[in-house]
Length: 158
Image (cartoon, rainbow, N blue to C red; front, side, top):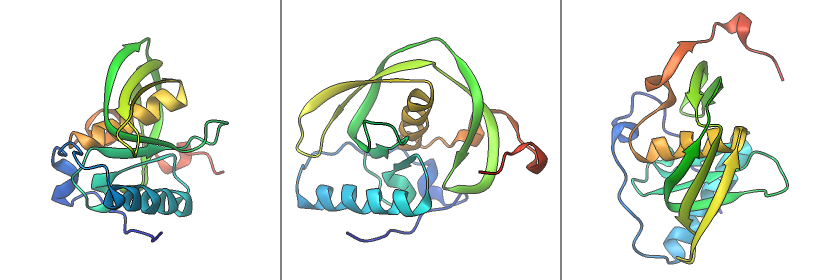
């Protein structure tokens, strides 16, 4: 496993639509492993392949719950319901946060690192993370959907 550099806002790769994964091989497994290590060190909840310079439909989410790290290859949201509005940030936009409206619940259809198809449900933070990372795969960053950016005095310290 290796750490990868996180691409920052302004890099054109973040505006491009990613291509589907067609080969489920060691190269994909290495990418997923590297992304997991990079996400953990960055202390984020999600990371998409374009954020590490790879234009493939791959993302990972880990909100720190019992499900742990979730790998999504070629993900698509097949169902969503409800709405939630809350603060979001992005590893590609350090120290910037904004209020974004997202679905309260989503169902995602994806493949795992071996190409097996599965569906997974997310609610609240997990739904927000799935939507945020899948947006990255379509060349969209959260600031394009933000209702308003938060001022530094509105951001809670951890």
